[in-house]
Image (cartoon, rainbow, N blue to C red; front, side, top):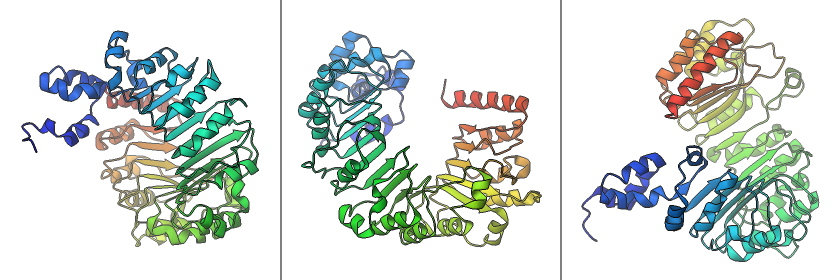
Length: 478
């Protein structure tokens, strides 16, 4: 092994350093000396993102032609920049948003392309584009299409591409027909389907059933129907033995049917059940997976009337999850009546060292001792890795939420050095002052913003918004 004379000669170190450098930083690095130029020049050309275009940092066409072979990643939401892909034969990732006049030339010589994302694009020659994708992209493993309208002439090429994919995302898209019954989607590990029209639920059901190695299944439909509603636990076990992440949004599935699906999953790491009838049966089926559960998003009531009549998530569920899931990174839909929380204060939360995103409805008494808020803040201060806090309150609720002010105990959260965002729903009435927002800026080094109304007084809220935007500009270095 040749002797290393400079730490920059270690590829691992260069890759690690490059993660933290912006394009403007890389441009400065290549001007330091010849060795730095050699080290950092390929990284400067590695990828082009929208932020670069906004700052008018695209190089001249002559340089793109000369160094285009170094470009690996390209992402564009600007129509005029699509020409850059013509001179980038070694692309591995391409994201095109609202681009027009796509044709076979867009994909020509892209033998190494492994990821293709298309959002609301327009084709000059749709059939030739998908025919080129079918035969000219042998390394393609991930495909995402959004807001596309496939024709009957091009849909066959699309389905012929899918059996070699590992990731497929289809959203807001028209498919004139389902996949041929002869196709088997064996490599597919992650499938996301969001509001797909043109094909029937039976087509979708038959399609999903031919994905034996699925690890993640995400399904959302504004129509509210779910193809899996009739599946038994045995069927799930047989069809998808590796399924560990299930995301259901806007789907009508009963507590009993969801429990059957969950019972058939051998290991659950992620579960999203927003707008489903998650209940005692589903919860019982989920309980054996608490030891390895990483993400859990549960339904939250939109109105106080809905909460009174049919509250899906109880405090007993929330408490057991918090004390029993040592790997939990995300929890949304939690419910915590403060008087009940006070009774369970002696039990530590198992996820205190892992939880990063926490969405919860704190229900305080109408007349509440100020020390109660300080107690809740002290409880939250255990979440050392917390990045985002969501506070939810159903509309028309008479109960107040957590008071985000220093005078009420906000200073208890000083240990949360990873905190970046606080999200407040419109119903969370706050009376924050400038010193409260300033405290967050001063004590949380990664803090970016508070989303939602910070003060019910419009004048004070406006001043707080100005301060927030000033901090965001400082954080982004602009």
